[in-house]
Length: 143
Ligand SMILES: [Zn+2]
Image (cartoon, rainbow, N blue to C red):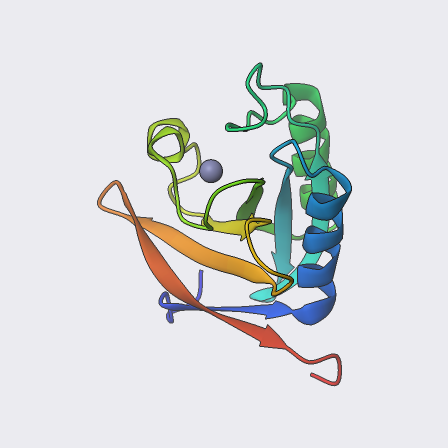
């Protein structure tokens, strides 16, 4: 992990992929994984949400999650972040998110569709079991 834990840099291309995935599924929380290589965010792996109440909760499809983790390892990448969307609420962790979290070492990225056209994508990290906001910096393509 980086020594700088309070900032997360994300290529704008990845942010756009996440937003597109969320916008294509406006009534379902989308979810996925972001990998990194040499501490740089690299790829977005979308994962089907198999939660019964998928409008307000996400549960990653177990097989797809295992497969994505396998690809991440095979590409010599690391798991950087868990992504999900909030179709009708703000981009802050819900009580269910606090309850469901699986990866204490990963960042959590939440994209909200409850906005007026502006990308609302926020990053969090669990510190002592609670989500704390992390500064998210979108990198331009030239970087
Ligand atoms: Zn959530």
